[in-house]
Image 1 (cartoon, one colour):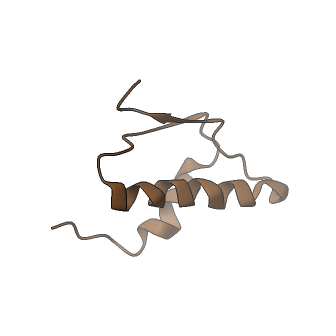
Image 2 (cartoon, helix red, strand yellow; image 1 turned 135 degrees about the vertical axis):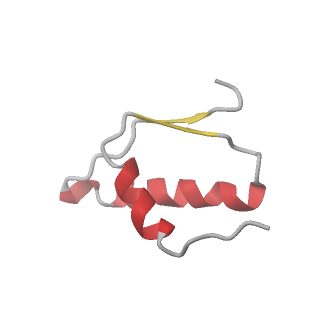
Length: 63
């Protein structure tokens, strides 16, 4: 059983900001896959305020 910290949704988008690439193993946990994509979209939504979203989101299962 996986226990998820509620703080992760506040912390991770900030850690993604300013990174060139994000590597993530898509397909390992289908229920969780939408979560990092949501974090990426939060950073992209803040681009007008100066946030720099990652340029690449790579599937580490194939790279």
